[in-house]
Amino acid sequence: MIVKTEQDEIARFLGDASNMPGGSAERVCFVESADDVVALLADAHVRQIPVTIAGAGTGLSGACIPMGGTVLATSRMNRIRDINAQSMLVSVEPGVMLADLQREVEQLSLFYPPDPTERTCSIGGTIATNASGARTFKYGPTRDYIVELDVVLATGEQLHLVRNDNHAIDGRMSLTTTNGRAIDLVVPSYAMPAIKHAAGYFASPTMDSIDLFIG
Image (cartoon, rainbow, N blue to C red; front, side, top):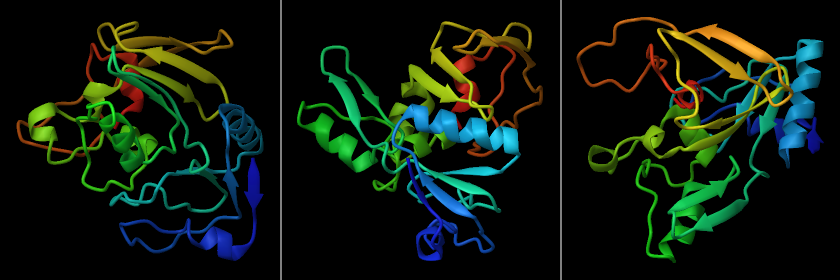
């Protein structure tokens, strides 16, 4: 993990495509592995230091603008781990750019269907926001194409989630961290408006646990 405290390094992480003002941070940590993420978040949790995740900064809602504390930059976690043309599955780290992924799969005569408008976005960012683009009208949003996630919680604990392995039942869900801690939670209950919408937290009484972390 590379840690930068120089103001010129921090400055480029204090804004994004939303152009919202007011960002501030004490340091930027360029994580290079899941172990780095675990260590950073576990320490920040104990010391009560706020952490803001920074992807490519292409979002329009200001989600990656820090309000003090530490910026966790994913740009160095940019490896495409595997492409399986037969199963049409890819495994990537969160900092992989959409354009790089599309270029690699196109060489196999494949494409990644939920193609958000900004091709310099990171895959981790598109998952966090359930990003959509022009092709979404035909193929659906990012959520429909995520089958497995490794998640690090704010405590530094980890979850390994596989779609269809675990669902909420009557608005209640149980998760188990990789170190064996059980987490029981109640899924928020609210009526969704009968209009097209692309904002707000996704929730359903029978939702898949993986969808807690998508958009």
